[in-house]
Image 1 (cartoon, rainbow, N blue to C red):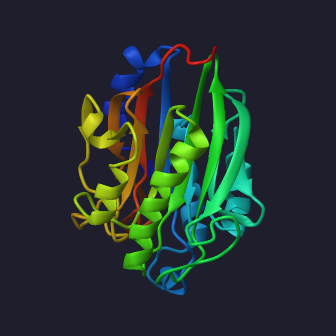
Image 2: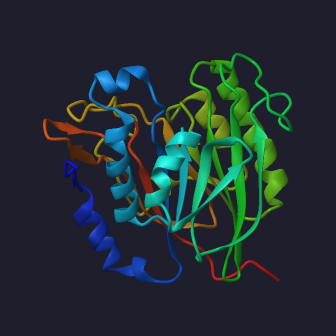
Image 3: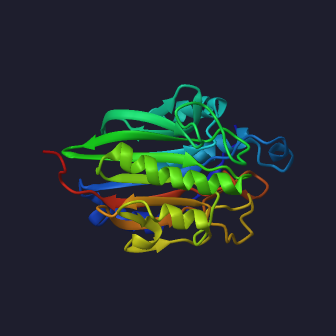
Length: 286
């Protein structure tokens, strides 16, 4: 098998964090990554899924996420990644495997989980407005020591402008209803940039903060959508992490990692993963 090399442009930053305050028990590493659906054109352009499995796995292992929200993780792709992700439990809902939440085994108690569709009938598989696909949000309720919080992972439709806006409004309804005042993290591929009407609606969720701006230090060499082309600068910040303001965000970074396939440097996906390192309170349980 051809050896594939991962070049970690984010290494020095990450090692510096690990050697300092982020080794405390109250620090957690959260990530999101759209790992790219399988397009027939990808193989012709040198970005075949079979080439990308190992680089994706290497990045996940190196950054050692405690929680990772995945988008476009089809059943076949998750099966291919499974041998490399044995340290994680995947929160999936029935056949809707595309947006799983990977939870580090033994790190949390999983108290509850669920899913709602981004439609007028969120309780069942459906689509509304101008959405092309049946989009949904997966959530999980976690406990770390005496602290309980929720994680929501979603992927907004890229065709439907109205669908994206209505999906953001649904987040304003469902997150307070599900969490009942408990802290939360909302993350995913929103197919919307900062400053858009979708972004502004999401920023109306109670106690919300954008981790990129709340962090003590943010490192964004390029934005998260990368065109599969390391030579291009991306202005498209389509992927976001929003959190309850109770969390202290120490580091936020877009991981513009590349790999060498024997001919050229490539991205493992057309989206770069995002890492957030945050501190949680000691307790919020009675």
